[in-house]
Image 1 (cartoon, rainbow, N blue to C red):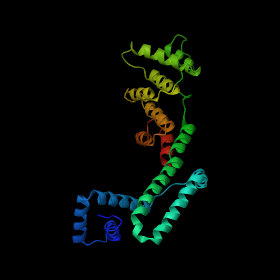
Image 2: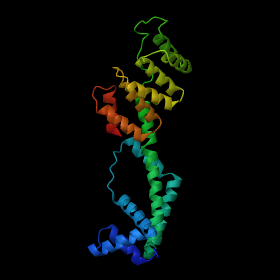
Image 3: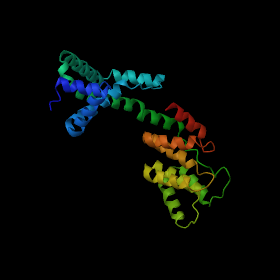
Amino acid sequence: MNLEDINIQNKIEAYILGKMGANEKKAFKKLISTTPLLKEEVNIQQSLHSVFNENIKFKFDKNKVNKIKVQLKNNEFQELSDHIKNTHKVFEKNRNNKISFYKYASVAVAAIFILFIIIFNPNDLNDYYNEYENWEDLPSYIEQGNNETDNLYKIERYYNEERYHEIIKLINSNLNEETNINPEKLIYLGASYFKVNDTKKALKTFDELTISGHVLNSRGYWYKLLIYLKTNNAKKTSEILEIITSNPSYYKHKEAIKIHESL
């Protein structure tokens, strides 16, 4: 089968746009199911049709608009734009060359989507992290006048002195001796792991905090959210935001709502 054939291309277009009669559609679907190359071509064109006809709504603010302006002036984007225009001109001159245009356009669309991911995802998540991170606002025991020999006091003092590795060593040595894990220690342990860039252990520690049953357990979700914002994990950020915003009593509930509404 010659996919370049104008009759095939017209049938694909009619199939996608729903302009085929019932019998013709049934026959064409059977042809698609038995012709891998045709099936691939139909899938490509269906995807492109969805992209070009989807009404996508973005909530733009001034900063985002400025980012777009900068990106649109970028040389690589300008070159991509010129290529698309030139390809479209060739396509208009030779209507039989639909397939080439569609395949090139699919690459162009992918490139544009990557551009928008760059603009709207990683930078924005980092912005939220920078605005809301509160690693210096952990539960305090110095203010409560605890004794110098108390481990919690020592842990907090080490934390203020940025002695994170010592905190990790101290808490882990104590955890082996404790039946019930102290939630305050889990908070400082998770924060210390994060400070030394061990996000995997930090997340695992905050997971333990969330299931501790302690009044401080909801802090674990907030600290996990900060980590996901910092590491630009949009999927996990969304999941944690759903948890926090669905529970009014959770730590930083109002802040989570603000982030959720503005994303």
